[in-house]
Image (cartoon, rainbow, N blue to C red; front, side):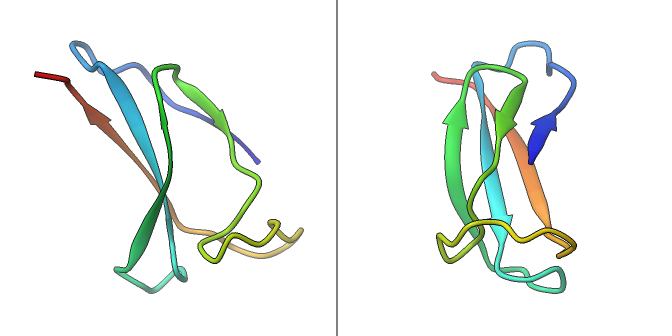
Length: 65
């Protein structure tokens, strides 16, 4: 699954999180990237993504101090 998002001014990079389920608040960081895109291939448990299944994903901008 290709993820793309808008650049956040002043951000150093972005952390990509996948939630345990669409209704869960439990999430796992799967990547830290400096680009505004990422190809997600695995779910919360590290298994390959499945076609037709819903996934909850968060992208969080960060700045290195």
